[in-house]
Image 1 (spheres, rainbow, N blue to C red):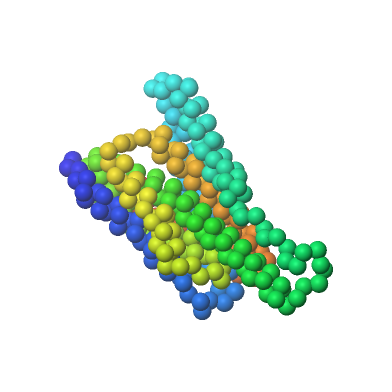
Image 2 (spheres, rainbow, N blue to C red):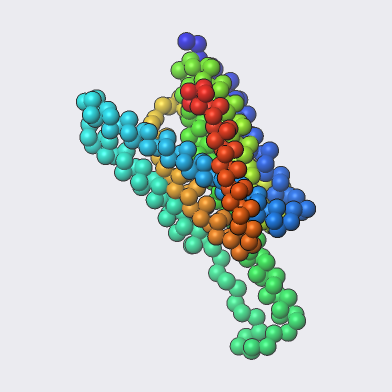
Length: 287
């Protein structure tokens, strides 16, 4: 079978990753009320929940293949144990490791204004409000970028699948993967900006988040075209699965204080369904 050229693979991988920018500009809208923002954030949680199921199922599949290979006598027991340990360690790095890293990077709370006095002037009260707002903004932007990084790890593994199928001459599969991942990545932009709430990021932040979240699809297609490594793929699935679960917990806790619980759960279910719908194209092509 005739394989795609390296240049064609890289170009199409970039196209699949770039669709993440379709949802990111919503972060610049100031017209959204609290109810709409909660709905958007919980829709994002639904998309992230599907991504968690998707990446972990792919990771389990690689480990199960190793176990079956040991059962058939084509691989050693140590190889299966190594991959199982890699799945667990990668998941821990993506969840607990991310929590530790964020705790260390989190700025310390500002010192109290007004010294030991229990009475605050109007000026002190305004300063406290500004400090609290700045702290909340920094936390929201940090959460959004964390989501972008987790999505990027997932998309790197998707790019690997594109590169491998293109290099082995499975042109129809590679094409369907590219279309499916392009549609799928379009929903991931909402997953990144949904938890920002009322925080309006700069265009620079939006562009960086898009590059971190969508760029790995492009990079993965290049690596997958040249190197076919199930171990590398498993590592990225494991880390991204742990990171996505951590982010889901963070966003869920942040949205609880705004109310609209029933609406949020309906939007969560809708986001999960959209994730399934876009992934069916990939499943149709055998990806």
